[in-house]
Length: 344
Picture 1 (cartoon, rainbow, N blue to C red):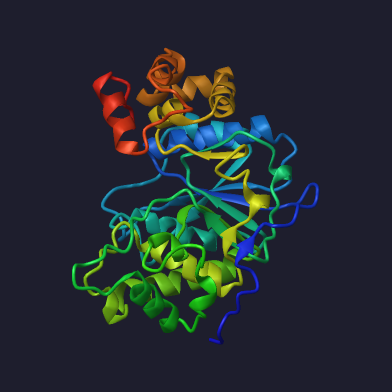
Picture 2: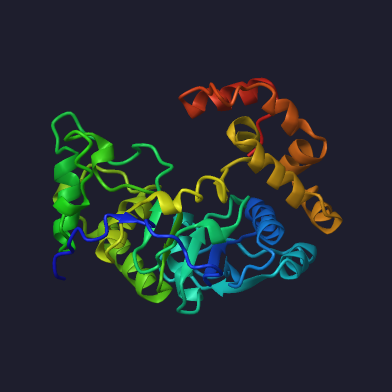
């Protein structure tokens, strides 16, 4: 593969055309993810009633990669998702599955028609208009709402630079053009690293094939610089920046600020949403949960029942000052657990 230039190290710097069409992909399974998928679909319908694309929910199927049936078994949930405009499509795992569920997002790209897509983790709330987001689907990007979780640097090295460069070299990529030179050497933010909670591109087929092939090589045929590194659960986030860079993408620019902002909220748990997110996100959550058909399904899940419908969420919210939140998420979690408001 030829070297990739630095032509697009900031993506989303241009405004999106009005009514730009794309599809949304998330993963659904029985249990917690089915209720999160209902909120995702309901909030999309609530905030983007004229959304021109399709919401696809990739559902892993029983088979050798699973020791149980991962499908959504509740007919009422399946009927509600369909009524909200979501289409459940079967995902037949070939590589990942129960042993590495984060790999579902990689394999799920094969379930889409080959049209521009936005992948969202299922625990995402839609709280604004997608027409305000400056997508450039030819130049992919992903979420910067992340921490320096990988790599873990050993006492005697190698360092961040050597580890990341070994991966760029393995796939024939221009390492230097991926760097944020405003950050110091050997500081984790200097290197291209994303949260895989959202990412997009113009071709799920091309992106997915490369994502799958490269993730397998990173996991099982990685450079010797990675010999002491942990790949679970970080494999998707190790591979994602390499794939994005290879397609000429990079860090999200100001045109994409609505993702992880006024348009989408990757909340991870409802308790954390109430504790730290803005008023607009809480309002969008409660509006999406209000219709009776949605309420009848979501109240069967303890976090929604306790936090939204009782509602303990507002009490949990009152524990924190959103203008002066603790710097460490663990402090939020500990406080919520101590006060009895932690639900996953």
